[in-house]
Image 1 (tube, helix red, strand yellow):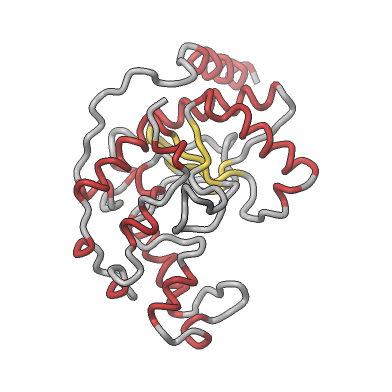
Image 2 (image 1 turned 120 degrees about the horizontal axis):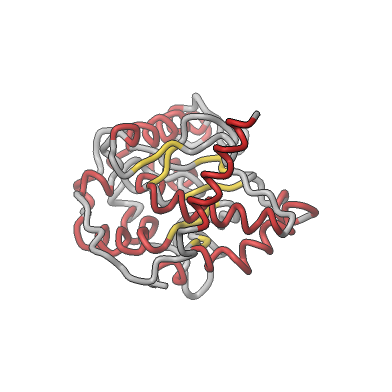
Length: 252
């Protein structure tokens, strides 16, 4: 018990020494392979395993800087009676490929449908999957800067604890460097994924990666998974990768 208490104290003191946000932007340029998730988070020196205290399951990873910022946000939320829980974090290219191909082939249903049978047209099937799931190589979750919090149901965020949590994030997340990447579509975000109240991005790193993705990733880079041939037709880069909440594309 004493050992456990000591660990808690050490973690608390460690978090307390880190500023809420990063105001000075260092050069965070990375390889294109990193941007597209073609690496192993467990073996990357900048990534750390998320403690089970903060997550819904074991084995998830974040970049160290994003993780420290998240832990501070978690503690701030707890003081206000709000309990954050990471449901998903870093996903490599191979991880995203498994999700995408399961939906593409019908092994995993989408809105209760086997898309391989219900939507045989490849372009329309891709667009259906792209409502909420990214093509491998295009997901912001590759970067170790993104967290999905508490629930994947919009209705959960509309009432009771879920609504209170979402309102807390809207008011306080930016203080810790986080921004809701996919808000409702409007004149500022005409295309892309549907609204995701659970998806929050750590801007001090992700804004640089967004800029670099725009400059370096091309449509021919998307290959090695089922349905990759429609990447150009759906305009995966401009209409999805880069179509985010404008506030998340600004340096804070």
